[in-house]
Length: 301
Image (cartoon, rainbow, N blue to C red; front, side, top):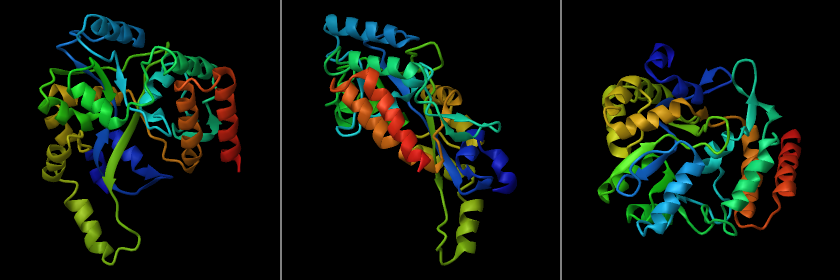
C-alpha cells in the first residue's frame, strides 16, 4: 500500500499485515457490540450482572420472552461472540511479544480465570439460567430480537439494518464485563486480495491500489453492507450515525483476530468445550483444563 497505508485505520492495516508484509486492501472493520431495544430497557448497563438483571426484570414484567440473546452454533457454540466476556475475566487466547504481535507460545486460555469463566457458562447455560441457549441459532436470535422479544442481542453491525427495518428503537451499548478486566472483542477486517495465480497481476494491482482505496468505493461498500469503513475519511463520514460511532468506539478497545497459523488449532476444542459447558454436559474444573491441554498438544506438533 505504500503511502496509502496512512489513510487507513491502524487496526485495518495490522490485520492485513503478516510478518512485515501487507497482503491486501482493507475495506471494512467489524466487531460485535450489544444491541439494546430502548423500548424495553431504557438505559445502558456496565456489567453482565446488570444486563441480566434488566433482562430478567423485562421478562418478569411481560415486556420480553428472553432476557438476553446470543447466537450459538449447534456443533461449535460461539467463542467469537462470547470472547469479550472471557477477556473481561482475564482469559485471552494468546499473549503477545515485545512488538505487540500474538505469540503462539503464550497460550493464555489456561489463565486462572478460565475455569471461573467455564463455571459461568454452566450457570448461564441450558441447565442453569438459560441465558445462553444452545438451540438459539443466528437466525433465531435475530428473529426474536427483531420481533421485540428480548431487550438485548449480542451481535455485530451486520444485523443492524434488519433491526432498524423491523422498527426496533435501537441503541448499541459498550460490551458488558463479566470480570474485572475490560471486555475486548475480536476485531475483524475484511479486505481485497490478489490471487498469486492472477493472469494479469499488474492490472489487478492497479485496480486494488488505485480504485478500491478511494473514498467513493469505501463509501459505497459501507452503504451496501453496513460495516464501518477501513478508510479513515470514509469512517469519519459514516460515524455521523451514532450506531456506527458506537461500534467504532467498541472496536477501538478490541483486539485483532489472531492472524497466525496456530489459531486453527484453537477453534474446534475451544468451541466444542464451551458448547458442552453451556449444555451442562461437562464439569468446568476438568473440561476447561483438558481443552487447554489438547490445544497445547496441537500447537506443539
